[in-house]
Length: 207
Image (cartoon, rainbow, N blue to C red; front, top):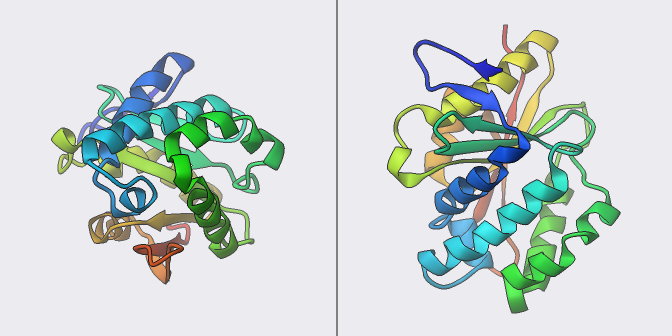
């Protein structure tokens, strides 16, 4: 069933048939992102191709057991959430995608692993919270309120059940979007090897 608001784009929880479209839109959304440019140098076109492999593997491996996937009805945006108490993915599950991830990152695979460990080290341990792992909207569809709409179903759940939420923001533009949706900047740290800043953001339930 879709999440419908007369003033916002229609959003719904994805099914397995949506996985390919979700991977494609996330790859396009992050093709020019500074954090991903640090991990996958080169042109945005080449990066988008590798990110397609990354998100295809991530979604297939984590949804629905460890992540929830939400989609804009027209496929131009996607959000991946970790449920309270289950944000950390078991190492055995991560090892399942070692081969495709090595193809994605190539010689920079150690940097990707180092980055993941740094993200995990900064991740709040408690209280239980929803974790917005990824949120992306295709460039051609940005500026239409789709990002806020993609967050709305889970943020409404957070407010109704009085559960906080956490995310990392890789750009100032996304920081502003998240602040409009109730998140506060709580800290900043740099990605390894002189990488760009990552902004830690936390949202208390609102009522």
